[in-house]
Image (cartoon, rainbow, N blue to C red):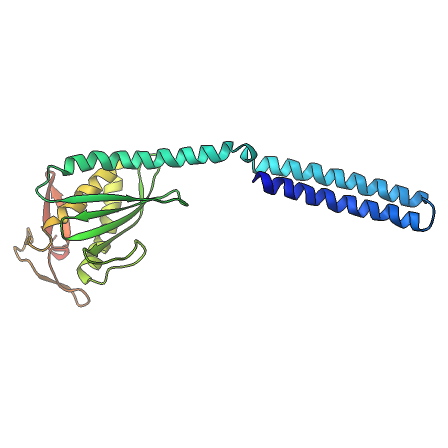
Length: 243
């Protein structure tokens, strides 16, 4: 920013100085400094100084402190604190997850050009969940949540090729909204709990109908229980139609 500032400043000054010198040359060609050309030179010089002043004022107003790296340092510090805050929640939850009878891995991805934080939750040998979270003052806003099969190599802005994970991704949108409204600043921890409850996706029977497969719809066909609900802090697998 500092280099661009001095470059622009030099260009503005050079432009007006060049025009002014041309006025002087024009007068000298005729062998004399005519009075009206001298006045013209004075006007151009005044305009050049005014342009310099306006440019400097606008630069200071819109990019205050950038030439001293103050704002850059502040923005980097805020971003770092944001990541540490989410990382702190994840670290605390990961310690709790070590007591689970199945494996859950949370991997935070580096987001160098964004205020959001992306991370992947691997639930046992069942699925990968990719999330994009934007930290807020009271709660973390989940901007994207999508489920994939453990063998799929896709990013957070794609969809799974498997119908079962497409369906769970749909249900996750409602789950995120409910958790945000009811859990507030603890929403991320509860969301991680909810995701971990899918560790028995391929083995659990529905808590209501006691069946594993159910005709979800003409599009999704037969699916296992794709929804997880809580009752007295305990998670239950169920088909959405059985709720």
